Image (cartoon, rainbow, N blue to C red; front, side, top):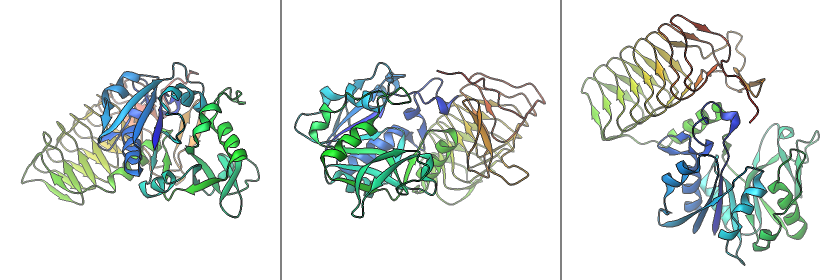
Length: 402
């Protein structure tokens, strides 16, 4: 089954992490997010991948090359991001005429058994059961599980099945992509889905597990998911004076020094250094070349390539971009005293993360002065900084429409 993966968008809600790379290239455990999508597609039965690129396209091209696991990889360019139908239209020349094709979002995680079921027949749409369907595009289904259409954010949802943004289209859908602009000013694949429902009996295939990664805390959740399957492998240099419990991967080229205590699952990538005398717990990723120093505690966090938490600091439930540097004594708050979910600013509005424990999000090369205190849910911009002893209570990113 030929498969189109949409990976052209920047991901403005993921700022500042996407200031310098596209959202699908953000790291999830040992590979970028879109790498997980591609691998799931191949395992499910993809025979050719066409990846639609746009923002920072060179990053995606460099990562994939011309094939993946023996499956050929091609690229289509969406010069201006005008919606999902517009993205697939950019890939039409790569879709073989007369054959069905799959479309997947490159910024989502899919459970492979359900994805394999979806690949088994045409036409189909991936779905997911949620408790609050009114916040999503909801599938209108009959008693036999066939889809009549999709209703966007209805007050009275026709079902608890939301559209998971994954489709198996018949070959003639190549001719259905010239749709009208939606109210959002975009060309939407949901209009193509409606056309398919009018022409065919369309199966709704409910995913057992699925995650749309659109906001920083969902990137944290994606890493938590990916680390669940971790199996211990110690290829790097691990001191006899280090202790660990639970799954731990130390890649070749990584170093774990004496006095380190790790409660996995934890992934320590090539070139990273951990210790001495620090405590790592929860589902934590220490990226390539990252450094965690003396008397530091890191809990359930993602440190991207080259990030440094030198000494005497605490990092909890946080995402640190590339080459971030924490000054000595920097402390992250990750819990509200009232026990409510931590909120974060997105596009000028405070949004609940749904997480009781949630720390900070730092853009690439952000730095803190010594003894900085960071409130739960704040963001620091790319190349941003704090002064020694500064207390950061509120978000430091100026929201812009882009």
